[in-house]
Image (cartoon, rainbow, N blue to C red; front, side):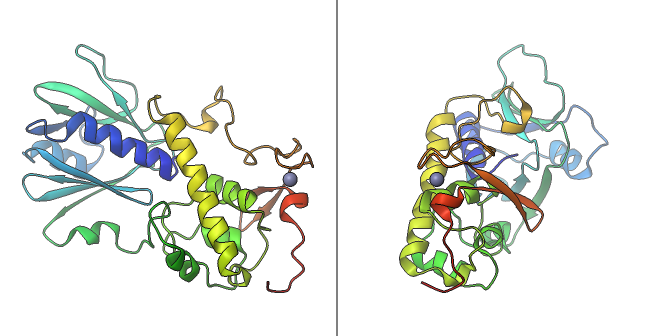
Length: 269
Ligand SMILES: [Zn+2]
């Protein structure tokens, strides 16, 4: 499932393949499935001027003043196309420029969401989202986490902090040595800073590792787990050697090391 780093990589691929390449057109392999895609494909948006990302959302600004919005959903990703390639299975649409198909948006489970804006303001594209998790300050994190609920589910609320999903919440809490059950508002400012840096470090590690590779998701099978704690129940913690455990929090699995991250006694720091 895409999290912030995968969406950032998608944004970079889109910029490299399509920005400033002249008029862009959208091809829809199966017309009649999505009215918005059909309408966009029938239009003439002109050149792609910029690709913006905030949290897990993308906004593509075109020469005609329109903006195409995209959320990758559960399985959405872009695949590069070369001249003469067959269109991949499960392609929802294909971006073409200079007379050639360039990038296919492939979405086997069809959970991706699309939108289109004409008029209004660029900030409308990300309305309702908190500050971007990778590009946000300590003050913004302190504000986002000033809540009585446990810190793990608090990190996942996109309206407070945009882009942290289950993987980077687990990785960041482990990296910062924070008990996922602790009320978010009980964390000291210093601990919030450790957490912010740990989440951002884990995201940057994925960006560096995956930047040049075709996009893959852990749940596709056959993909080695690159994470320190996520998905490693029963394995030894890389930091201390204790057994990693898993429990459910707000309906989602939390992986954690009770030795590194335990010790919360119910009292604020
Ligand atoms: Zn440990």
